[in-house]
Image (cartoon, rainbow, N blue to C red; front, top):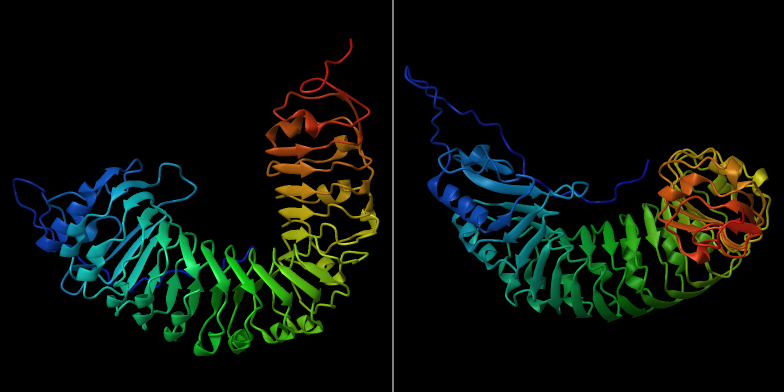
Length: 485
């Protein structure tokens, strides 16, 4: 049920091709003349620059065979290679490539798309060979180890429709010539080490639908340039050092913008009331800034929002009544709210998977909370409130819970009656009134804190520090004192 907000690369449409086989009386050797000799040389040169391929991603790339049949290769236009698509699988540790991008790849002159995604260990500078590919439209070199500055003449790649270098190690400022790439619909430079200011010249790239500069080292104010964009749907600027207020021209994005992510910066002032006009908004992240004042009443108009994160600011009561039909993730933690209870529009959501309301002034009995859905819950954080009752009923109705935090409340229940699902990796119920024994299932956790409760008995074998168990009535065994015979 979790939304996938990753905008997929626009892979060009490919037509199936037929390999004509010539069978002789003396052999069954398949002979093909489909692969152009330059394409084969360029691709084999790329393979020669790869020093490790533990999953055999390029095992089908063999001299003398039809390169149009090789893994990750698509051909069009007289059987010339037009796209290379190599995608490491993040859930498989050996699905990666180590090496560099050979400059001889420029021999593949009909390339219009290069998709090197999650290859992890491709190193070296920005591949200058891209300047020698006149038909190149789409470049996705994501989640690897390319480094150094971007070339100052990157603006010469004027034909590009999409450029994503996300998740590498590029440094320096973003070259001013990048704004000559006026055909771009996607510019994704997030998760690198770019520094300097927000490049105001981006306003010249008017066709952008996706702009990401997140997780860099950019600083200064966000320029008031957004009236230039009529099709922008995704704006990701989080995890930088931007300061000042949200620029007013962002209002011009209201008709189409689906993702507005400004979290983990140094933004200040009040949250603009015009954000309530963003009726197509799926995700709004303003977390970890210095916003003050109240959340605008206009937020009640955000009926289609799925993900809302306003945590770690200095926002005050009252929180507006939302009219959203199904929130997926909500985080209002660590502001100055006094909600008293979990909002009804949260309780009624049939698709929620993440609820974080730490230090939100909640004073309620958890036994009385009857959410419409618990099956999809992954994350629950109700820490630092004044919640009483038991969490057993709630947690025993979850099947995929990964993290439960409720430290600093007045919860009272027998820990031994908690059904611990296999997915649960973090549990923090410290500073409550929990009693009983610590179950053996904690051995599968990554993090645990049950300190300052009323637990008793011998601890199961575990890897956690003393601080995880301090302040209980009569716990014993490593890492605490030995149990008395």
